[in-house]
Each structure stands twice: as structure tokens, then as C-alpha cells.
Image (tube, rainbow, N blue to C red; front, side):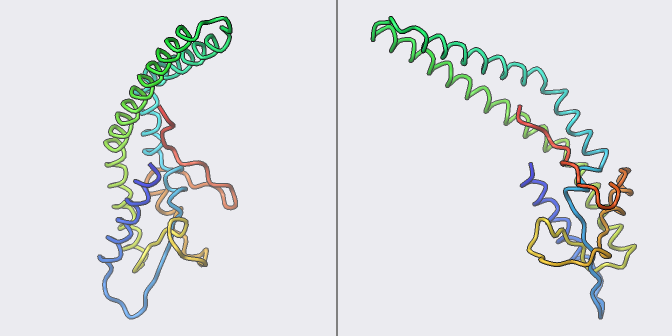
Length: 187
């Protein structure tokens, strides 16, 4: 997800750069995309929706993991098995593990697909707000240093709070650690 969001922000920044009018002097601003995502209510809603929609699948995966763990422990605890029986049980355990991996991958693909579906309108809104802030502030560029190669920036150019407010969020107090972005956890 972080990779998708980085690409989306890079695209938004490129769009903002190409839409900037030619000026004799460039004015640049920057945002902290991780803060924007963490402090935007709509993005938190994406996480909540994903967790709610995939709670059953998460429970299924947890149950499969527990069952595999118990079966593995049982096999290790049975010292008196013949080689043939042990091999047969190991093969059965391997088949269960393969089925578990296949199901986990299937669920992960479903989560990623749904996440993209839910994130798309949020990212479009963020791109729009970035363009509004860029135009209103007379910025030629708005960059995202944590995702780029910039080694030094003037904190006065940080427009993260403006973007967060326009997205309906509450900016974190100055000096506060940025909260983790609201994104889904593994299924």
C-alpha cells in the first residue's frame, strides 16, 4: 500500500508541477504524505472499512494458523510413529500448509483489490486539494521530501497542515510524532 500511495503522491506532484504557470521565480512547498494520510478522516475510514469487511477472513486465517500449529506440535510429540505413518502425516500437514498459503494469498489479493477501490476516491480528493493549495499559495511545486531525495527543506514551506485541514482532518500539534498512516494490516 505504501508503494501505491507513494506513486499516487508522485503523480499528484508531477501534475501540480506541470500545471504550474511559468513564473520568473519558483515558489516551492512541501508536505509530509505520511501525516496527510494519518490525519485524513477519509483515509482512516478506508482502514475501518477494510477491517470490518475482512474480519471474517482474518478470523479464518487465524483459525487455520492455529490448526496448523496444533497439528505440527502433535506430529512432533508422537515419537513412537513408524516411518511410514510419520511420512504420511507430514505429507498431510504439508498439504494443509499449502492450502493455508493459497487461501491467505487469495484473501490478500481480495484485500488489495478492495483497498485500491476504496483509496482511489480519497487519492483523487488529495490530488485536488494539493492543486488547490498549490494554486492558492502561488506554489510552483509541492514536494514530498520523505518520499524523495531532498536533503534539506525550509519548515516554513510545509503545507501539510493546510492539506490536512482541507481534507477535514486535524493537524497534529507541532513537534508531535506523526501517527502511523491509516492503512490495512495483513488479512
